[in-house]
Amino acid sequence: MKPFLILCPLKLEMNALVAELEAKGFEFLDEQKSGLTLKKESKGSFYVAVGGHGKVQFALSTLHFLMEFPNLQGVISVGSAGALSPEVHVGHVVVSEAVVEHDHKLLYVSRPLPRFSGGKRFLEVLKDSQLDFENGNLHFGLIASGDEDVMEWERAQEIFKQTHALAVAWEGAGGARACEYKKLPFMEIRGITDIADENVVTDFSTNLKLVFPRLAQVVIALAERLG
Image (tube, rainbow, N blue to C red; front, side):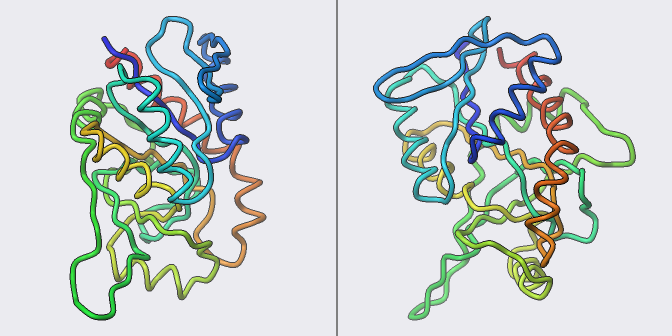
């Protein structure tokens, strides 16, 4: 079966994910191609690389990888996020049923926010795996995407009311647009490190080690069925 690509927005997120996967017995080979640096799972079932921060950079990186590796079956973004829904807490994992671009603001006309739901194939595989965490810590739903550090509770609530998303991060819409252009599936998997308030910076650093073991579990469930 064709390999899939995991893109982490930040290098420290990629390093954390790879470390957790290696602790579970996965092995990786370093690979370079056309200026791209990535880690190839030793059996060839998936790659892991850095996609970059922000929607535009992530879209460019995604498209670059898809052009250089035309045999990929799709892209999965794995990283951290802030919670929006009161049902989602630090340490939980949110899987995108769709990505909604919350900062796409039109003033001349009124249209729905851009929404991308191209990850149906990945989503079906993950739901069929019956993967679950204790106490309902795994959620499926909308993830909001926008180039904005959400660091105030009031702003987080505004985005929640606007989108009804479970969590908010930066890059999803960029990766989704690139995959839509190439007609490939895209899914986002986010570990909740904060509640999108004034404590974001401290909470992000503290809670990375909490969410990445759980993110690795989701990746393993996918690799066992897609690889």
